[in-house]
Image (cartoon, rainbow, N blue to C red; front, side, top):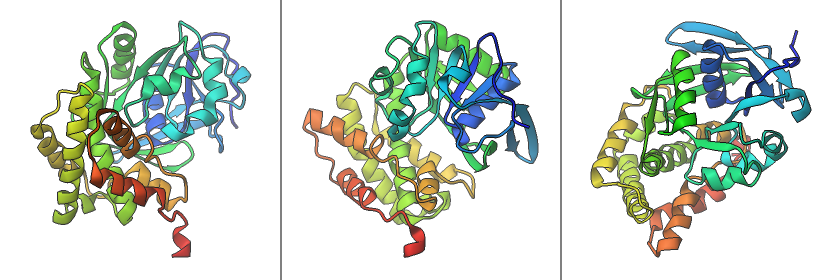
Length: 306
């Protein structure tokens, strides 16, 4: 039986019960926080996390409207960036100065995107390094692919949230230079996501020599753009990112590949599109990224029709 939210005090709201959102919410639940799942299409009574053969379950409440969610001092926003407008009413409901919105979205334009709906809230961008896969509503398979799961800004409210996440087993790092961290993550996002989506293959395709060559060129273009945006990027970051792509565990997948296989719209606007928009601001040529964007924008999503 599903439990409706009847909390008279504050809790954590989860907007976007996909693999990443579930993983972060489970960590907060493990740390003793009460989780309210907002507007889930297929409601579920608990979050189940499987990792290396071990499974843990955490009860949650469901809210079908912003009014049912009640007062939440922490919000996890984990819908895809292009779906932010779809949950705008939820964000508006949490638009309070004492509310923290943890934005677990890809890309580099978090503040501008969320401030359209919740300008009064404290918006905290999160760089996510987890590899997670949701198999059923509320159920996620978690893989840790680096020694850091989340990276947050080095400030007061973010530090407080980081401590709670650590209590729940999440390996969190806080940094002063989030611009560089976000752009470093973007290097892998503009390669792993598009290249697995375009080929339809899992992470092992990233170790193919020809795919590696394409990934390196995509990153080279993005490094020039990131430097113009103020990120402290070098060619060493490209080689580090390539090594990371080659080390991703066998069987791992990407959110963009999952979305394509499921026939859902793809998140290329916040990834490759963000690189191109920044490149245009600085007059930098990024031909391979433009090619990838054109392919993604015209990709057939209904695989059964092939």
